[in-house]
Image 1 (cartoon, rainbow over the protein chains, first blue to last red):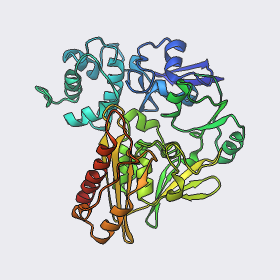
Image 2 (image 1 turned 60 degrees about the horizontal axis):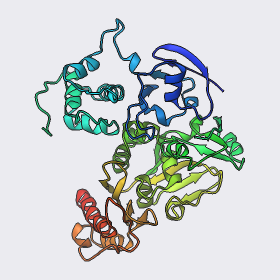
Image 3 (image 1 turned 45 degrees about the vertical axis):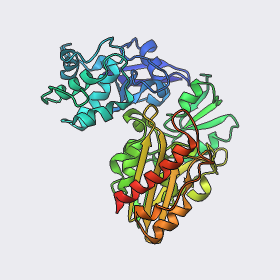
Image 4 (image 1 turned 90 degrees about the vertical axis):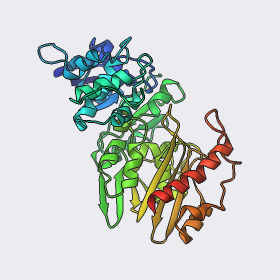
Length: 160
Length: 261
């Protein structure tokens, strides 16, 4: 069947099977490989994208369900001139990544938190990122990056 | 995952017609169904998405009853069920934000996972599960682990929750899955108290009748002191023994009561 959607502001369409996952459509169909397939069991959150403004795990949604939707991936998160957004820059400044595999999902998840809660507490950041797993950092620097991106002073997080 | 035909009707009638096919299954948020299809535990010939049916979405309150459409997401309940705060709180603790944006109340109840949150709220509230053909009392709806009174092809269109005077949900979370290791929903109504427990029993969600009687007489954590939940039907797994879960039932019920009173 044919599906069409707007991805990062661009109208796209493609042929999919019923079982084609949104992440497969984005990566294999559109070449947007910034969205990662980590666990493929909806545990890890590396595949997090926004569908009509809501964060979802694109490995646990069929492409057919996104027909007609507005989709944003990590490739759509930079500023218009190609420079890193405040949130992305904060991940770099606070060393909020090591191998980087989980980072696209972390950024997409954190972005919706900051939309809903512009100045989250550390506890709110940790609660919101529960569905995003990082195996390198131990999370502290990710939490710092998100707090810093919200304009808050970050010196230490509670678990340190 | 095996392939299937995907259809997305816009009315309940069309969905019911599409589900007449033996190989067809309804798809709501898919947060359990899609992972189970990937594992080939489930291989429908046709998936009938219910998400195109506007009539199944949304929350309304009338005459002390909150009615939630079958495909209303956990995130929507968490954000909009202001008239029933304990239910909104429960919805906001399910899974993680991405799961809450897709997962639906109808899907959760139809699946009746023994550690899911919504069955506890539905049973403790004496909710009514509304389908395309009938209304089912929560007491009759849940029939054991992953088993409900739903017929093949029957769709949950809405759930009606009588709003209690006070209620509280205490979830002891299994931190990896964020399902309930054991969780207790206590709801206090003018005509008595209802206590429903999820995550603990091999039979799925259940009411703790002795606690309900004791709390209806005297609504305090002390009223539970002489009671104990028998461990024989409790789940044992690597996260906790049957005895541990039985103990949690009482502790969490006490915490819920203390939080209300």
